Image 1: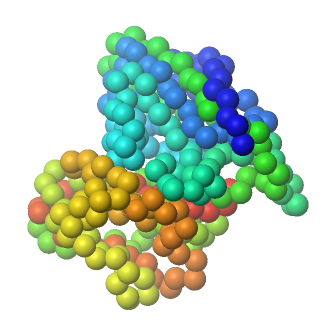
Image 2 (image 1 turned 180 degrees about the horizontal axis):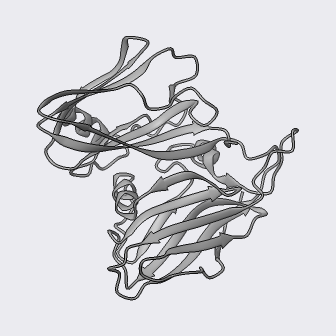
Length: 273
């Protein structure tokens, strides 16, 4: 389906110490947004929230979004931050566009995206923020919102060197039906090994050096300080890690020392309540 590139309406409250708000038109399918910014750094856009029907289904910092984009082999932001909804780098267009945000389309129960907006928290230290936004869109498709790519942050910590076990990140719900990727961002130090167990069976286990090489051999570009487990690393979108039906799902990280870790989780699922 052909796409178009269009400017979005101006944001409200673009000023230091405030939250900028872009209210986006509905009626089309959104593949990505491009945020053009000046007078503010990536680090000063402390959180970006993507909302449907007034509730966030994605939340991340601008710094993390830029690192994830570079991991997906996009150019660094440098005044233009891409916010993709498609899954980038895959071999099949239908799998790439599976997670585009399909607004104003309703399922048989009347569920659909009636409003779509972006909130950006701006730090008080920002000099003189200026923001504009454009979107790449196509015609909406029938049947409702369809599959959405949810992104949430779960901070965790470890008090010294050793293995950190994480078992309380939500899984198997309406919005967490399958794991697309997870990114661990330590505040300091390094992670040398990562493992995932599903119902006590190991389903992923790699040293981080091995993990980075597999991603380089695929369609990704590993970023220093960001530790990704990516189910689409080879360019195939049909092999997410299934979370529905699991009785136990946990991550194991071998950490070099005391650190806090942001766990940035991308899951495939339906639109939440």
